[in-house]
Length: 222
Image (cartoon, rainbow, N blue to C red):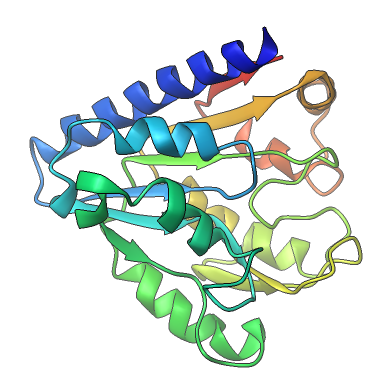
């Protein structure tokens, strides 16, 4: 039953995001979609790829990325390529958050310039949330969290004790630059974490709180 609920949720979210893109494309040449990685969004990606859209006018980028090659099993870019940029949706322009540099610190400036050239404000930012209350790569145990929450720069290199790989994340400021925000989560543990996040205001404890004060459409299934 929970799998069916998650599939329905993914379809509903895909329809909402597709409609957001259609609305914006009615009055502008290009529209931007920012998505998250992980296992939760896979059915959403597949449902969105099946939606009828002028995909050649859509830009897609990520909220964050592990600093790994695009073909790596842990790459969010690979996930998007395999599940979203398929069929007609392959006509969309995908903008990755990695470079050939050895570290995200070395590549952050290039990525920030690349991201800044996209069609902001985004039509939609689709966020996920971890069991520790992180979203994008805004981790509670990251030394760069304060910077990522406060900087006007588009991209920040991140290293967290809880993560085995360095990452690059869009800053909170950049993620806020969207006409619409969606939170896509599943499972009882994520529901409980969201309830906890809603009951407090310390953003450094639970970084998802940085987005709970703005209009946020929450998509949850067991």
